[in-house]
Structure formats: structure tokens, C-alpha cells
Length: 190
Image 1 (cartoon, helix red, strand yellow):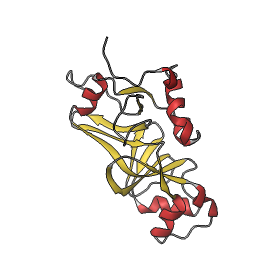
Image 2 (tube, helix red, strand yellow):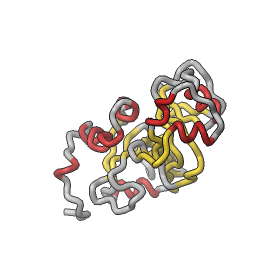
Image 3 (cartoon, helix red, strand yellow):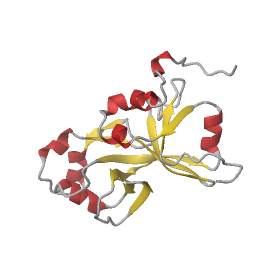
């Protein structure tokens, strides 16, 4: 990173402060997939849509062997390109058509082949499916961080993949030792 952007938040959780007024991000936790001089991109991992993975597979005419997909919610990954699907997952030896390593064993894939593999129980053991993403232009996220709109912490894959979505916001804050219920929802500077 350059001196103008000394903090790279890639592979971090952004935890919305209780004062976050934007309804797209209130009480959200966003996994940052990219953060550089050109901007940032992430996936909100705790905002279920009124859709299930089974609905997505059916819409794409992908046959599934598992009715449990009708109980797995699709996350609203953010307000940008909500018609576009993303799969956050832990990597495995299989290569998907459009997959990028984010950090360590965490990948972001946006190709149909991973959905077909998931439907046939041949996909990654841990995954999260989202529609849309969160995006920030150059310097925008850094400015929001300076305004105390977010807390940030190194991401914990167990929170993304194993923690129930309604507990992820506080679970991420727990990594910092913060009880979000004790923070004021008023913005101010001392």
C-alpha cells in the first residue's frame, strides 16, 4: 500500500457501528475481498435475503440431490449488482471457472460450475452464497473508517461459515473484545 492508503483491509471483517444509518449496512458484517488504491470490494455475510440456495438452483435449472438447500439462505452481499451471484468458500483442489483466492484458503467464485458442484454435493465443504456486493471507490472506505463508521478485525472463517448468520455481527465484534450492545448509536468525536 502507498502512504496515502497505509491500511489494507483485505481479509478483514468490517463491522458496522451501531450508528450506521445506511440500511444496506446497518448491523452488518462485510468480508473484504479486495482493498487497494482503486477502492474496495466485499461481501456482506449476515444479511439473509428472502431466497434460499434451493431457489437459486431452481431458477438456474440446476437439479439438486439435496432438499436441505431449501433451508439455506442466500445472503444479500451488498447493494451493487444484486443480480450477480458470488460464492465465498474455502478452497479445495478443484478449480472453478471464475475463482480468485482472497487470502489463505478463502476464495471468491462467481461461475455457474461451482453452483452445479454444490448442488451435487461435490462443491466446497464450507461456502456462503450471496447476490450483490459492497463496493467503495478510491479512498471512500478509508474515509468511512476515519469517520468511525466501521470497526475492522482480521477475518475468522469460522464466523463466516460456521456461526449462525444472526450471531455473526456480535461474534466478529467479540474478536475485538467489544460488546456492540454497549456502544452508543450516536456519532461523535471527543
